Length: 137
Picture 1 (cartoon, helix red, strand yellow):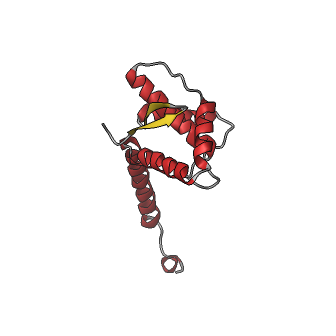
Picture 2 (tube, rainbow, N blue to C red):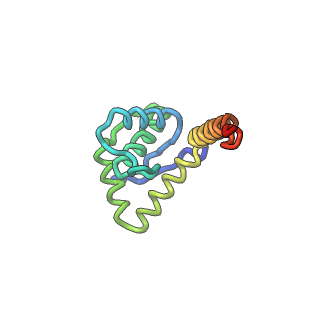
Picture 3 (cartoon, rainbow, N blue to C red):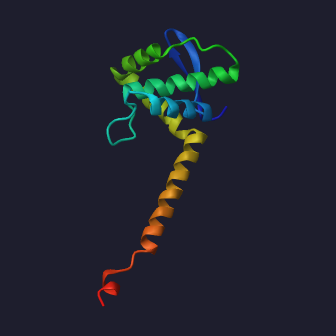
């Protein structure tokens, strides 16, 4: 299996979570139309709400591929993240999940594209920026 897949134990059952394209699309759509704040201010760090929604979307992604019904609701994922957030072992588990997400092929692709566009915009800025001495004559 790819690095974008792992399993979690939630409410006594083991479920798959898959951080692939549908997951990222659903998370982005939810983030755009939600009144919840999914990221810390001026940061790429997730809030409890954001991480719960991301894990929920990754669960939906796994259900889609396995052709099974989604049976776990957002509140359950929120409680799962909140409970994990309150213990040291729980925080390690959340870090592991964020690591799987960050290492997923879809996120590596997104990060590569962001770096590429940043480098292009920087080269445009530096390439068309005449020095002060050239303009002073």
